[in-house]
Image (cartoon, protein in one colour):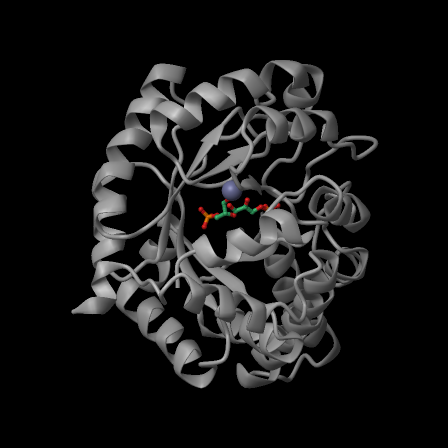
Length: 334
Ligand code: G3H
Ligand code: 13P
Ligand code: ZN
C-alpha cells in the first residue's frame, strides 16, 4: 500500500511508521520478522545505492516474498533519496508505492521545481511523494551531507524554516516533508550532547497543518552494537546517535509520522558478524554469521517499533486503507 493510510492514522495517533533501508534478504527478513511479531505497519526503503548493489529485480522479489509471507502486514515500498524525475519514474514502473525526491541541496526554487515535476509523474500513478527542505548533516555515500562539526556550528542556518515549509508544500505539491531539525545521517551525529530542535517541529506543525513530517538520520547507534564492534576489531570511536527517548518524544509529543533508520541495521549486522568471526575463527558457513546478524536486527527493530509506538497498529492501518477504498498505485492494477 502507499503511505497514505499509514500517515492518516499516524498524524493524530501519536505513532510513527518506521522506514527501514533494505539492501539484501537478511536485512529484509530481520525487519519483517520484527514487524510481524509486533503487528506493526512498515516502510521498506530502497536507496539508489541499494538498487545498484542488489539489482532491483532481486530486491523486488525479496519484498514480494515478504508480502506473500505476511499478507496481514501493511507494507510500503519507498524510494529513499531519489534525485531525479527519471529515477522516480523508473521506481514507479518497478512497483514502488511511495517515492522521495530529495532536492534539499539545490537552491530553494530548484527544489520546488524538482519536487513539482516528480509529483506530477507520481500522482498520475497514484504514488505519494516525500520531499526534503533544510539540510541534514552527516556523510553518506550518494547522499550529499555536511561534516558533523561544521553542521553543529551552523545549525540554525540548516534547519527547516517553518514559513518557507508552508510555501514549499503549497507550490511543490509534496505529500510529506522530511525536515532538518538536528539529525544527520550515519553513525557520527553529534560531537557532544544529542539535541533536536523540537521547537522547529512544533512551528512546522502550525504552519503546515495536515502535512506528515519525516525524520531522516534517526538511528540511535545502540551501545550494545557499538561495544561489540569496537571490542571485536572495529573502529568506530565517538559514534553517537539520536537517543531513543528523543525519537519517542518527536513521535508521541510532536507528531512526526515517519522515522528513517539505516545505520542501526548496519551496526546490528556488523556487530554480530564481527562477534562470530572473532569468537569462532573456524566458522565459514555464511548461515552461521548472517543468521545471528538477522536475529540481532529483529530484536533491535522490535524495540524500535515500541519507541515509535507503532507496535499493534497494523490492523488499524489496514482498516483505514479499506475505508479509503483499498487504493493501490496503477502498477498493481495491471
Ligand atoms: O540516507 C541514506 C541511507 O542511509 C541510504 O544509504 O545511499 O548508502 O544506501 P546508501
Ligand atoms: P540513519 O543514518 O540515521 O540510519 O538515517 C537513515 C536515513 O535517513 C535514510 O534515509
Ligand atoms: Zn535519509
